[in-house]
Amino acid sequence: MDQQKSPSRRQLNKGQACYNCRLKCDSVRPICGPCARFVGGGLEDCEYTAESGIARSQVLEEQISIIESRIQELEKPNENRASVGLHNPYQPSYSPLGFTNPQPQAGPSGSRSQRKHSRNNYFNISIPTAQSMLTNHRVDSFLRHASQIGFFLNPEMFNSISSRASLSQIACPALIDAICLWGSHLSHSEALSSQTTTLLPEALRSAAMSLSNQRNANTVIQTIQAEALLARYFFRNARILEGKYHASTAVSIALSSGFHKIRSSNTQSNPPQSPMGYPPTAQEEGERINAFWAVLTLNNTWLAADGSPGDVSYAIVDTPWPLDIEMYSQVGNIFTHTQPSNSSSTVENFLTNVPDHATALVALHAKAAIVFDQAYRLATQFTESMNRTNQPNNHCAEYSRLHQVIESLKQALPPISSDVNSKSLLLIIHSFVHAATIQLNNPFRLHFDISRSRAINAAISIVDCMRQTNLPTLGYIDAIVGTLWMAASQVFITELSQARHNPGSSRQNVQQFRQAVETILAAMSVFSDCRMIELQLETAQRNYAAVRHH
Image (cartoon, rainbow, N blue to C red; front, side, top):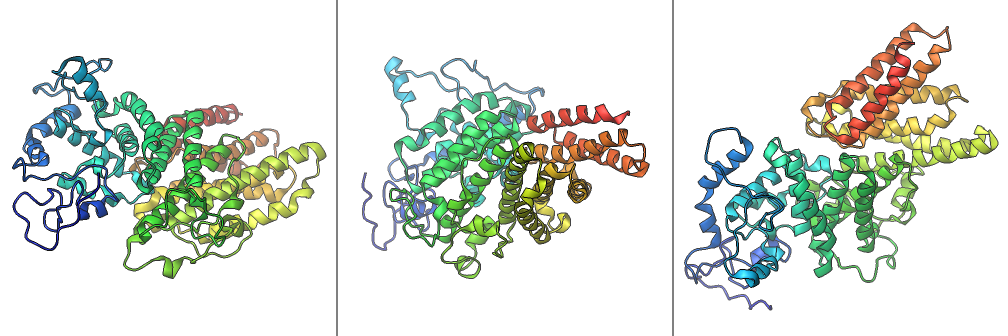
């Protein structure tokens, strides 16, 4: 449906302005100018009250007090108050958000019509305020940890929810469902967290269908975000195969959209059929840059952690390093001052120690993840080669090159205590870098004292980071730390095992290593609500028990 031409400057009569913006509305239908600019084209028509005298949002607002009591009942189901009345989840009328949908009054044809209702009107059901209030509760739960869960979009996109703007105008169904899934998972309300088994299939269906109907810029990047959130959800729950599938899907969409060639010096490198086009704002371009690095590192580090071969070459990456998301919306084009107008060989330059001055936390996180991935890949090659030739000296050049990159990166890291609001991310970054040192030196520990010493010192550094962080206050941490901390614990456990066969071992060292292992186990137990970390903890506990009493 084509939009009508914008009216010339004139006073709008009552009810002719869109209910969302009102003051600056141009009354264009179906979506007014301000709303179209705000939501990047919009996913749902604006509301006008001229015909009916009242907007649907106004009707919903009148029900807030009733719905608040219903939400409280969900959070505290044991208190004595009127019941909301939930349906059997296997009945057709069950809603994915846990409330009862109305039974259709129009017979079978009415039922079919209801099922065919557009997903753009996702919350238009009989008790829409209950649905939206419950969804807002989930969104709030998610946003408290959004940056830690890998949310690379600007979280300010959700600010308008407080003014009753429809969530479906802000995000596509795939992203809404992925956020609701995570919000329920992280919620302290048992009634909400128990609904993840219902929300997960809905999120999977939405993600699978997200690009089937439309492939505009907003839908593409939000689908990438949804796939990344699903991948992290599966990794957190130790469902590695499913996590790798969704991480790979996110990377595939990003690559097909040309996100690896943003600002590329090679003008011929952008995919000719990319749906993205040239970004109209620095904010949108920044989101695409951050999206690429988020999904690339997510995919590659979990492949390394799982022992799987890498499937994306760093050689194809020209996109500049990311910035913290709020920097893109600062006054003026931030790229003019901090980023090159043309970029090429971003990762290859980094891995050959070419200075780039990229020090934003998200850039440091990407670099830390890359050196961990590279250390694992090289260590695997070293081990396989030495098993054939028994000549560790053959790999000195490759070892030295990556060692220098890791050490340079360590020098660029801010201390754990430098930013109280980013302690979780800083802990992960430091853990990645020190775990990279451990991985790189593992094949040579039995051959060279320097490699053994470097691995031990790196493991000690991880323990020091844990001791500098008030872990229980973090609430949530990336599941990948289970693998990183497991690697550190294994360094000490190996030393304790060797001490059993060496009567001359220092009792002081043995005691230090035991304390270090116990610190790691205690740290992992803080986050054992994450199934992935819980499994790593159980393995580390078994390994430690085998050497502890000898």
